[in-house]
Length: 439
Image (cartoon, rainbow, N blue to C red; front, side, top):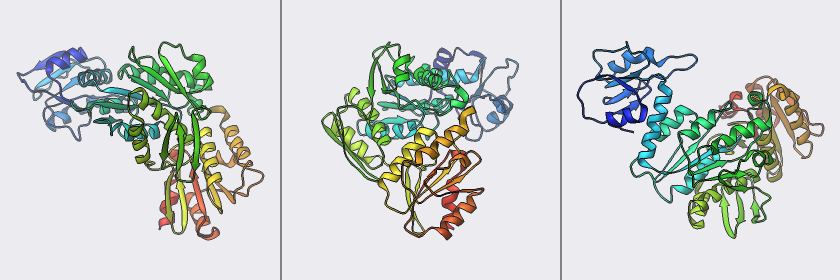
């Protein structure tokens, strides 16, 4: 992203405190470690840091100038000094201005789970239709949005933005500075219920993505009764679900799904009904954006699960399925169902704590144990204070205190050829189980 000083003032409404004649266009950076010449430093602030403390370092590193909320902070060596009350809002305004200048067809995605997977599926499809930019990794907050919009090129035709949240109002802010042509709600479940208090509040937070849809845009949402309840119908809405009469599931294995939807056949190199449901969101988006089914089908077939999301590895004779990027009751049940229905014996499930579930967190874990009793499995292994409450009555369950203990149990008690599912919230660091097994 590069803008002239005239454009910067127009976009940000910042006040020029100092400006030494320079006709160059400026780039922007909020990181003094990577800042370059002809870039303006944007000092962001958080609960535990204040970027304005590093303005001098930014100039020492070669920055052309900086934004500041202190009119008295004017360094002699800076070429440009701009005053603004809120540097984060300024960054958002600049990124939005640049995005509108490029004017890509914009798709915004949110959901309680699966939004990064859908974003990657979406990218796999749209990149075959034109130059496509997507959110970097899971950078789905305000700063991540700015970084994504800033990475647009003049030739960028499509923009795919992932939007996350931890509180009410956060997705609305992201939507305001994105102004999507299509907003996608992958699902609305119990993730972050500890912060938001109820499933209805979670649905309301997800629905914020629709507030700034362009006038001729559309909302594409999982057919959730709470979303239907709060939908104000200001925009056309397409609902998708596994119950759609146009869906026919043809084949499912541990690493493959084949299905027909609206008369066209699609193949996914990933397992589970939940991933078919994710694919429906992508298909509906592609069709609305006037992509041919052939392009959508090609992109979905090329999609590969990303790290720690149904990542299948063969390690020391064990088949490990690592699905431990995140965890909530809905995603845990989906992973268990897929694993136990399509995996040969012996089958072992390793479960860890699910985070941010609020006052009923213990009950949510107990219900996972009850859900497991609908299936057959050789072992359930648990790790974590909350996971202690996962106690199916019909399956042998062993609780552990450390990752090393689990790794030793696998090596010493399980026979090679066992299939193992890892599922937990990210903070449980279940990838370390794999690292221990590799030693």
